[in-house]
Length: 261
Image 1 (cartoon, rainbow, N blue to C red):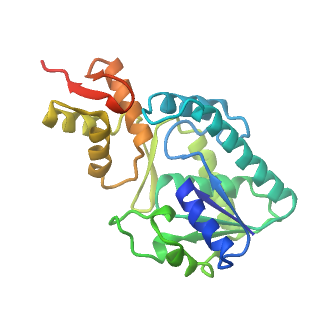
Image 2: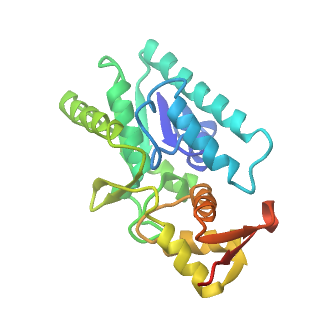
């Protein structure tokens, strides 16, 4: 069994369970958050559009190391190779998901790509666990003990459901390069600028504030979706390029200043 989940924290927790003999199989952490950016080539080993999007995010991230861009590309390519190898060997997959867009799209990508002869199962933590953040579930939020209790809850997806998920994946591949959110259990698209107003409104209250604090407050203030700091730091850079705010300094010391009329 290959257990697939989105993000490093979730993968680390599942690997702890495997190492302790509480979960059978191996773990693959999918490194590409599919909740934003283009999806047209997101199912390819060498996705030029996805890579360009991630490089934009990483170059705007003050905590990025000098080789994070290359490391991300290597990690993603390795994940694709691991999936291809699993499918060639007929290894069954279990996808561990929450209720956010990145997980929902990962499940749809795998349903579209997984060969018919390979079993595909899903564990949806939102159906079994109380969440520490009301309305939002992510596998990485839970402890090994909490996830261990779900090891027998994997649900086998039938051919009809896999086909329906694959059709949804094809739809989202053709739906541009925006942001995806899950609203009342349904994936919806929004423009890449959809959180800019949150950043600008919070900046208006401060006038001048560290970029890290502003991004942290915005992440906490967006209470209907998980939004990563990587994405929001990039949006600050976009807003600065448009003349809607001013960025001073670099790295951890970077500050944001409102542009007054």
